[in-house]
Amino acid sequence: MSRLYLSESGRVIPTQCEELTVFRRARKQLELPGTEAPATLYLLARSYGESAGRLHLSVNGTELTPIDPDATSTYGWHAVPVQPAALREGANTIELWAELSVMKAWSLALEAGRAGDGGSWVSDDTGGSWRDQRMGYLNSVRAEYVVRLRLAEGEDPSPPDMVFEDSGCPRLASLREKVPGEARAGHGGSQMERVRALSAWLASSWEHTSSARAAQYAPWDAETIIAWGSGQLGHNNQRPITFCVHYAVAFVSACQAVGMAARCAALMGTPNGADGHFVAEVWFDEFGKWVMVDPNTDALYWKDGHPLSITEIQRQGEDVAGLIEWGQGTVFQRTFPHMVEFIEENMERGLSFRHRSLWPRADLLSHPEFSPPGHGSVSYCEADFVWETAHRDRGFGMFRYFADSDYFEAAPQH
Image (cartoon, rainbow, N blue to C red; front, side, top):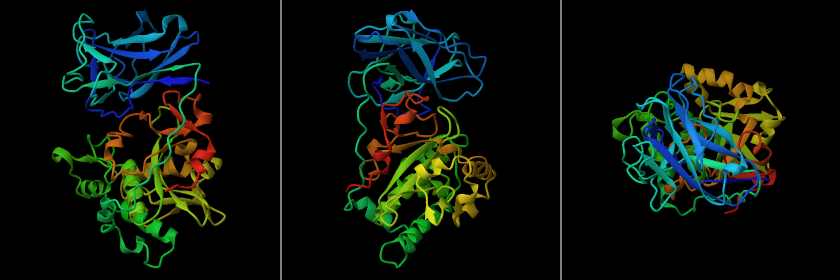
């Protein structure tokens, strides 16, 4: 067993992070028990390409192996082994700095919005003095740096229970007025026909726009997503990021608006990779299981006349192309070359389904404060996601919640 220690939840806004230089340094403090076990330090950071120089770090004054820059220039997880001799009981101090004197070396991810005393500080004078406010590269936020440590002993906490919207939520009533009539209860269609109507509607509503093509992330608010996505205009009059995450989020809220239990699931092909996807699951009493729905490409997977769950899709490996049932919304999505490439290189090969997780809150409308502000625009980092226990030691040690199949397959409890 092992346990993860952290003081943030990974709600990262990639345009508000910390630039590190030889002068500007970051400090993170984590409280640990006494230990004689090895540990792994995880940090979410990006370099400015291969010419950025190395990222240096120390734990309680002991320097660790520096991290070499890479060519991707994207935020990703870096894992650094820490020997037990470098750790102590109580407060442990981690410091990070770069080799260049300008802000073109390394960026360290942060979670903005810390209200009280935290465990993160920034220095502008090579560590001579430190402050825990006016942080981030624009000196404008209070924040926690996304730096975590996993000890090879202890036990992670149990995952949280799934939370759904209250049926009386007024936001659901407002959204219900926007959904297609054939998706609403009482219109004569089967549950599958209603699900397909919602999926086709959303897949046809806007162009998939990723963080490679826009910078302003749309909030996890279904009506706002549809408005921003269809108009390609959002906060501060900028083109919004409205991609796979937002199709699934809007779909999950729309399902609940018309009386169907649904939830969000994040998928990942390789740990820390760029082959992730974000889909939805809908509970079907008829089949006694959660059925995977991808409202981005308007796709379901079927076998022997039954729609498949994520677990069942995983069992098929890469032999899934013939199992996909495309909906009417796929026609619209295929008008964009980047979506054609995604469908052919990922969907039809089942790559994203190798690792699955669950976002344990579906009350996205009534409690927007619990939704992440940039999921998918950086490598998966939100600590609230629940991943499969079998994958904890396969590159997912930076997360704190893990569960077995019973958790993922349990029927919804309202």
